[in-house]
Structure formats: C-alpha cells, structure tokens
Image 1: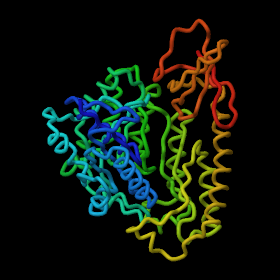
Image 2 (image 1 turned 90 degrees about the vertical axis):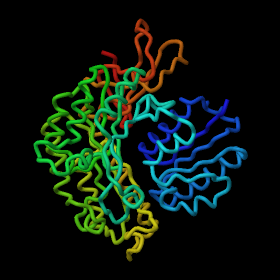
Image 3 (image 1 turned 90 degrees about the horizontal axis):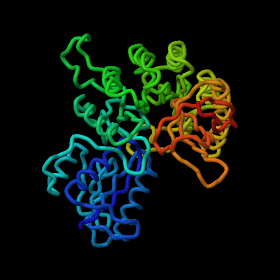
Image 4 (image 1 turned 135 degrees about the vertical axis):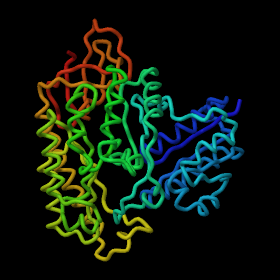
Length: 430
C-alpha cells in the first residue's frame, strides 16, 4: 500500500489545504506513513510570510528528502509560489505547485476521479478549520501575501455547508472559519449586484449555524473595519453558537505608523469599532496582532500603540518584532529600528498584555462559559481534570465530578468561571 507524509508550515489556510490533498489521496488508497517509516510520497506546504518562513521551508524540504530518499517530493504553498525556481533546485523536489487552485488537478494526476469540494476534518485536531475564501487585494507595505495569493475568490456556500455537515457528523463541535482575508468573503460574488443582493460573511455564518445547534463557530482573523453592524447583530442573535471572540488585526496604534504600513484606517476608528462591539455583545474577547519596531517607529509612536492596547483591553496579543520581508516596500525603508529597541518594546507590550488579560479574566468571574475539551488528565486517581478553550478564547480548566458521564476530547462543556491565575481560568461544571 502506497504511503504519504505531509508537513505544513504557516497559517490555518495552509493547514486546511494540506488536509484537502491528504484526504484526496487517502480516498484512493494511500495510507499515512508511520513516524519513522519512509514514505512513497511526501508533500510539503510552505510559508513565505517572513524570511524565516522561507528558511524553515527549505529546512523541512531537505529533511523530508533525507528521511525519505526514494519518495516523490511535491512542494506547494506560498514560498513555492513566490520562488518556484529556487524550490525546484532543492534536493529531491519532483514537482512544485505554484497555485493553490491547481490542487484539484494535482489530485486528478494521482488518479482521484471524484475531486472533493472540501474536507472532513483535520487529523489530530479537536477543532476543524474551514477555508471559505482566498486572496488579498490590500497592499500593506510589510506584507508579501498579496503577491503570492493575489486572486480573491470565495467558495460557494453550498460547498461550505456540505463540508460543515461532514464535520458535525464526524464529531467536531467547533468550526473555525478562515481565509486569507476572511472579511472579504463574498466580494467576488457581488460584482454587478445591488447592495440588497450582496453575499456577506454574516450571511454565510447565519446559514452555517442553522445546520445544527450542537456546535459552535469561531471567526479567525478579521480586519476591524469588516466587523460590520450586520455581523455583530448576527453574533448577538446566536450567542451560544457564534463565539463572542474577535481576532482584530491592529498592527500599530499610531496613525503615522499605520500610514507607513499603508493600512486603511486610523487608530481611533479601530478603537471605536471595538467599543461598538462591546456595546452590542456580552463581554466579548478581543485578541490581536501587533508589529513592534516598524521602520521609523519612535518612542512616542510605540506609546500610542500601548495606549490603544490599554483602551481595547486585549486578552491576547500576538507580538511580532518587525522583520524586513524581501520584496516588500517596508524592507527598503530607512530608519530601521535596532534589535535591542525592538526587543525592549516587545517586552513592554507583553507585560501590558499580562495586565489586560488579567483585567479581562476578572470580568469573566462568575460567568457561564462554554468550554471545548482539548485534554483529559486521568493520571490522578482522586480526580479527573479537563483543560480546553472557552468560547471567549480563554484557556480553562475544570475538575470533573466522579459521577459524571464519560467525556471525550472535542466535546463542549458548560462551566462557571470561578477564579484565575492570570493565564487560565479555573471553572466548575454546571
């Protein structure tokens, strides 16, 4: 029986696309190779969002060839799209897929007759990702992604609904909707139509939650300006099914830095949108991405970012020291910030994150939460402890009653938040 190994670098969209290829191959008889077993076919899905992503991709490709010298090695992903000739020169590479829209053709060349329109889940994960959209039309000065995923398109609603149904039937209880630019879902459908006829992300989510009440939907990264009144109204209608958590990308809280980044709005508009969400949803969680040390960033501009983070009260901040990305305008900018300064600003931002996270967890004490179980520890004979993630994206832990029915990983559990240590919440089962 032919065997396959896959490795994915980068984002949720990449993870989804690797699974799409893997499931297609398993459907025609391939089997997953054991950890130490050489495979007949190896697939590496690469990332190019940073220079480090390129480097890690090359390392993985070389390692896959070294460990599987007789395998057919196929490389796909954003690094393969950006530098196909460079990838072809790496040892063992038999084929480079430069466009993710070619994946059905790739499966067809392997003999897949019934080309899948989606996936059934993600192996070894308790939550499932559903890619609903691809492509980005923005031109942020630090980002390479619009060059490697420039064509914006949305998946048909019927394909997405069929996929979610399969995932629910397979036991998944959290579905994460993801895309390269999630908030632009439906934009390509709407050309030539009146506003009344437009398809929006909110319309898609409304149809998804109508499938079954026994699962929840979480939105992945979204731009603050795309958190529309319509989207928030829909989230408020389904508080048990649509997680009250938004990952809104800040990047900087300084208007002057945002202009150099070529972002589309100012800091106050970002704050106002978050305040609007707070007024319409019950204690929503906000998480974000912030780049520190963007070229020319002054102490005053960095302090403006800190102030915005305080105002919003993020429960999680993904902090990235600016790293020049080849082939982007920001890499050519003068006034690059020194590494020690970036490191110190990063330290200060993460220190602030600890404060804002603790403040947000304080608000949740006594609140009913829905927890997705991700790990069950039965090593202690006196008690069973389950850990997981709450609907508001907070890590959470409960001790299960002795007489409780068996619980599985991936299940949703109703709990009451009782206390926290600043990093995770201790709760009790309702």
